[in-house]
Length: 225
Image (cartoon, helix red, strand yellow):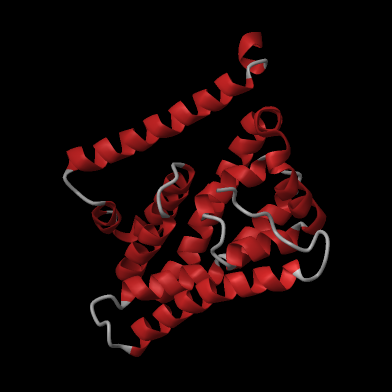
């Protein structure tokens, strides 16, 4: 056991194996049951919303694309209900991934990556809640990747959870509305959802450039090529 704690690469490798194995297990379970995840929620009856939240949280930890789950939620429940359900499920899953990263990865990732995570660490710890809000509102850093990456920075758990819960609301609504109106792509609801998704994507680099002009410490961390 002492060997595990002294080997950062091994601990991160174990975490990766656990995630991959759990992901494969969920995929095999869905395939063997012959039903889609949406079908599982539908078959749950009145417990469907609770099952949706639980599945969203689990799949977030397992790095499944959240936009697909949110769109499915919109088709199942409509945007009005799917949005809060998605926010709850995604926040629970994101917090779980954050805690996993913090428990298993902070010291280890620092030893492996060195200064490559220094900029993200300083930016998140300095700006806290506002930094998390920015990264959640504008889709620059992939949602699932940020969950684990934030766990190895100095951002507080409170700032991370609050920033995530608030920052994902516009995106959750947009993709839920897309899923809820996908059968009528000419409807105002569908077009409005597309417009919101595009607005968030276009605003991201503009805000990024604005923060960059504010001087040292103003620019958010960038992904390395």
